[in-house]
Amino acid sequence: DQQVKQNSPSLSVQEGRISILNCDYTNSMFDYFLWYKKYPAEGPTFLISISSIKDKNEDGRFTVFLNKSAKHLSLHIVPSQPGDSAVHFCAAPNSGAGSYQLTFGKGTKLSVIP
Amino acid sequence: ETGVTQSPTHLIKTRGQQVTLRCSSQSGHNTVSWYQQALGQGPQFIFQYYREEENGRGNFPPRFSGLQFPNYSSELNVNALELDDSALYLCASSKEGGVDNEQFFGPGTRLTVL
Image 1 (cartoon, each protein chain N blue to C red):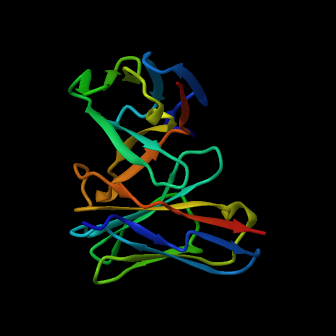
Image 2 (cartoon, rainbow over the protein chains, first blue to last red):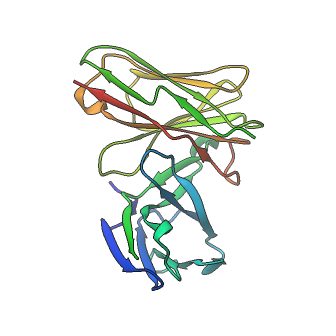
């Protein structure tokens, strides 16, 4: 039972254009979402997050939009740069029993073409 | 400030053997979480250690066990290895076990079970 879903395994975008990565979730108890990117041979690194009390959060080139009624969020990267080429994961914390457990989607591999 | 480190980088074992993976948390962090990332999947939460006690566990059998030491470094032990245990094992550290603290990931240990 996948609680966080990323249905696009890959995405190719021209340098300078917008990249839009999508994520859906099923658990209505999730109230906070994070995006991570992962390069090969490195651990995931945090990009941006959003609380469910907001519908948008912006940080430089990165904007995350949250649609609670649709249980959908998206990460917009503009302009896309070759260094953005990585696997991007959507994640949500599940603070069951006082611990902080991240539930991840399967990831979307973004390729930015120079 | 030293980041999260993991050892070894790669490991090859045979089915039925036991393995120990190690993680040094980032300076000032007292919480360590372990994740398993199988090929083509997102990281899956194994368990978390907070101040040397297990503080939450995912859907993994008891042959996955762990320890946290007084310096907050941690070990993941897997007994009776199975072929499906082949994966990237990621360690993440954070300041406290709660939801508002960012997790910083290490580069991972790639385990291959033959």
